[in-house]
Image 1 (cartoon, rainbow, N blue to C red):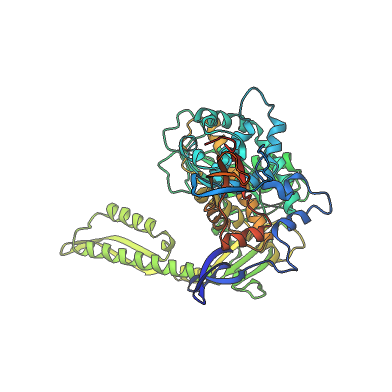
Image 2: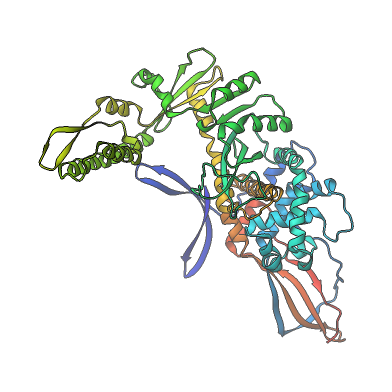
Length: 599
């Protein structure tokens, strides 16, 4: 669910408000519907801030949950008790800076206790800006406006209000320092994952008994000769022409990330399983873990490895394995798992596993349409081959066989739909030397009728019904969404770094930015704002800070003074609704400058 801004005119006046919108699938495609219109909190409602605090089970809230979390650092400024007379014509607004989105990201950073983590882990030396602050700059930049370290130093940081929030000047945030920060960040990867799992557990009561694991890839620009992990392999980005690395990510059933590992770009998915399991068990323990993986991870060696470690699993299987259960497809006793999806349990051959047959009406319609499309294309290609043979243009059996092979490769979903015969005529018919005939395979049609829309899962969980097992497996989409957000919203690809450690550090920064993203999504969900942060980030990005300069003097006479106030723009009506729902408020003024200088 996501937020959408609406504007209505009532009694001649414009009104702006938010609505919570849900996307859902229908037979005619994706549709959207309004779930709720958001306004002021009702008396019985609790905002998202309060709900986060309630998860601490009565413990005193740590500093990360205090309302003052988002206040700017204190600055010493004189207190004015006496009113001032202001010359209105002298008021100017200068030095406009991006404030709302970086203020939000900095608050999320502190909410997760990452400022304290780096203060404890990295001892301060003689540097003017701490390495923890530099890590915050890299992560906040990735969260708000993904770009290169050069763009951060030359453009982005200078036009944000982070100088006020972090206390680091633009001159101190330069590319050399940012690259060095990557080097300082990487050694703390394992400790970061352990810290974040604990802090996220405090905020959102994580359920870690079900772990979802998936693998993606991200590609490089450049030859990557200095990075042995950069190899060509199966690309999820359709960039097989570029070297890549593979990333294995583990998330909870709610999509909160627990950790990840980076593998060489030519690593098969199934070869990553044992490494990731050992890494997760080392960091988070071994008890009560159910692993959910797709069919790309499945190998008999991996399943045996899981069983030997006492682990439980729910995994997908290759489509070809469905034929072993053909007789069960036409039987009754299916259970409805949800609208349009039916499931049933089938005992495994050795009694150690349970197989789950599932069939989806939407998937069936899609696969049937695809089969019909490829069958029609294959038959049209066969007719063209036949016409070419009759005209004498196709007269070599080897060439005809190669052409048939290419045709079946292009239409592989229907490659078994026809039995094709190519033979040389004993006596040529005019120019025709080859005879090409075909007939439909009834077995293929019968199998397609039963198997379209069906797929097979397997598990070693006992005494669990088919619908529950299926629903747990479908939660694997949370890992897929994590990859989509990391690639589309946080722009992990392409990678421009050339050294292996810098590549790994870049991926770690993207991981931290995704943790911020998911923390905001969980906070929004507690506040009844859906779970799609992009709208909130974009709305808050409209909030700016700036310097208001004016001339003033005391009412009791005295010299005229030049006063500069560093202020934050007032949220509009719709932004105020979001702030009320989240349970926080923007600071009105950051600090006061130059307020003693005489004119």
